[in-house]
Length: 119
Image 1 (cartoon, rainbow, N blue to C red):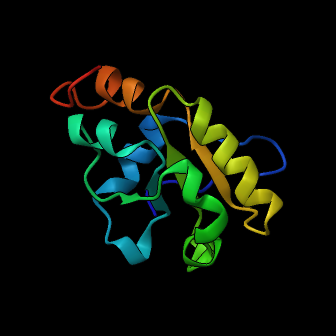
Image 2 (cartoon, rainbow, N blue to C red):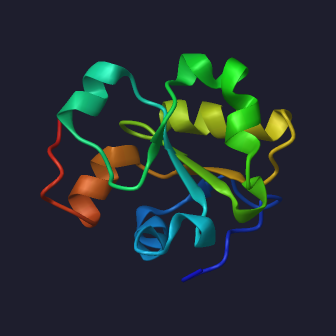
């Protein structure tokens, strides 16, 4: 991994700069990146290498999301509010290394990849 996961006892968020450092790694060597936005938002833009699980499907997807969770799970949404709820839900369901990407895909577009459309 390019950088370690943050200490989950200290924060539930990880910055887009840190996530960007992991993106080029093979999926089995980096945290799982999960987009929790709705399908219409996904049609506008996405971050390559993600898995898509809308927030409303998290309760029925915990098993899938917990696969390889020791590497960490980073959830993102539009601005970071839904993903923060999603990360808290995952933690409450046994995935201690769950994090929300600060600022969501909006911050990704602003600070990492301006080619990602903003909406």
